[in-house]
Image 1: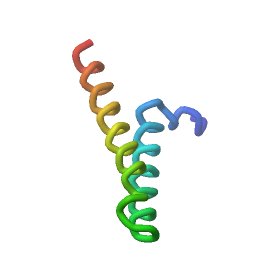
Image 2: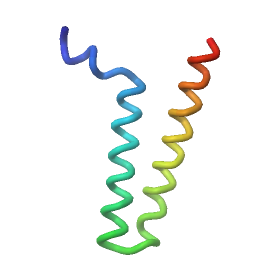
Image 3: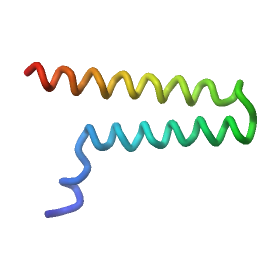
Amino acid sequence: MSWLNIITPSALAAYTLIIAVACAIIAYLNYGLPYSIPFAGSAIALGIGIVRRFQQRKKA
C-alpha cells in the first residue's frame, strides 16, 4: 500500500480545513480579530463543502 492511497479527496479536504482553522487562530492571536475573519470564513466554507459532499455520497 503506497502513501498515495491515504490521500483521498475527503482526507485532503479535512487536512485543508484543519490548516485553515489553524491559520485563523494564528492570525487572531498575532494580529487581532479583523485579520482572522478571512481565514475563519474560508474554514467555514470548506466545512460546509465537506458536509455537503458527504451528504451527496450517502444519498447515492
